[in-house]
Length: 319
Image (cartoon, rainbow, N blue to C red; front, side, top):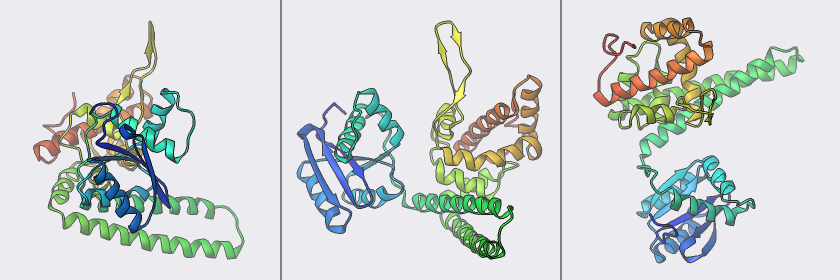
């Protein structure tokens, strides 16, 4: 895609409105987050022959707009806000408001047009929403349990107990919905069966991976590790050789897989356990060794899903 491509629009999504910018024509418009606003946006984009819309992930506010645009035949790409902001800063754009953001998003899309577009998958979007909602409720439960451990008046303790009971009930409902969604979607069910064949991985791990990294089995091992956020990056300059660090990736998936991987590497998975012990024997810090195990695990899963094969310790033994 060339710079100033008239076929792309940058859209900044807020709760009550969106701002759109077609840089090639220096056009900007604002619409309310209503059905009428959505229709007017689609008509405006069709009038100017726009075929790709790019917007940031905005806490879920972008989903309704993306759905409307896709139904109108317009390709939608949702990008990481941090990347867009870093791009703006690197270009010397320090000012920030909704109209400016829409222009920056369009400029970002034109500059990094080589990034693959996302194929919309309504079933996976629903599964992802269920999985992330469950994780959010679990975080809330953990925080409340932590608060409940401290001395508090009886009324507070009773309130906490009621909320904890409600949270536990709602988490169970979400888990049932996640299970039902997976069973009713053959592609998900097949992937889950493969993932759960790995010792140490169970329902919650498989659901997070299916919902959060649909690219598994279709990308290189390096990209799979980067998507998880466990790919090491160099920090060298001249003769200096800095420590390699992980960065980026889909943090919520990495966080969801971390504890299962700890269990796999220290207890449940003979292959990963042997690898973990070998790294410790070489002097690696435990956390560094665990991240390396996560990287090996995601690479193994990438291969298993690509080959549609279940776990075989002899096949996936680590050298």
